[in-house]
Length: 250
Image (cartoon, rainbow, N blue to C red; front, top):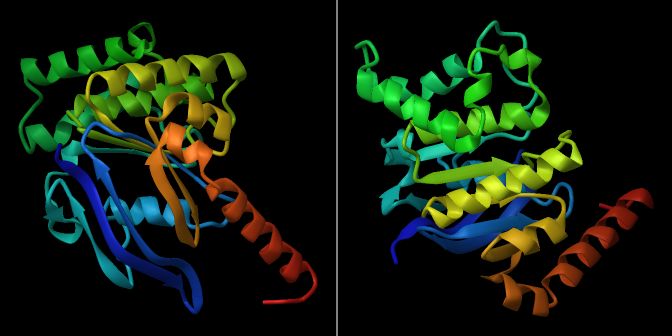
């Protein structure tokens, strides 16, 4: 099995505040990784570094065997950020127009072809929002907007889907349907990296889990991960840091 992402000895700090320390992990193509950890543990920063959106202070990252800073096949990556349910809501765009954006890197300066339109149609059908294609993005629920962003990634023919707490603000029924969609995409061979605060949901759906709190505590198949002490170590560490901060400590 080939590597989708290879992170080697990555460290990162904001000014003088260390966020990531010597992180190394490999995500195989077709893996569904659930990345968890306390608030402020560096999950979003690590995800951005994995995708080449942020440069580490030390260490290297490869995407599909290519150094992240030289990776040019951006259409292979689909990223749904933490606040995407709030993004673009003021723009007068329809669902179809959002999904069509996934084809622009393929079309370049040319008009979209019949093949491009077919990819858009298939992406809309695949995520179950074809009936909403003419609706304004601002009129959708949070869960529907997340599906539109995933459809955009699928239209671009992404091999890897990265999601940063995608169900924040999404109602419970839509959350269940959302994870059914992710399960289908994973079964189809798409690599998924998911940051999620609900550990139970991650454990139910992810094939592997990793726990982070500045350093990497564990990365293993879900069953082995749950048998480890990674959660206790990471969240106990976070409680200690929080208590020290409340008492005036560093």
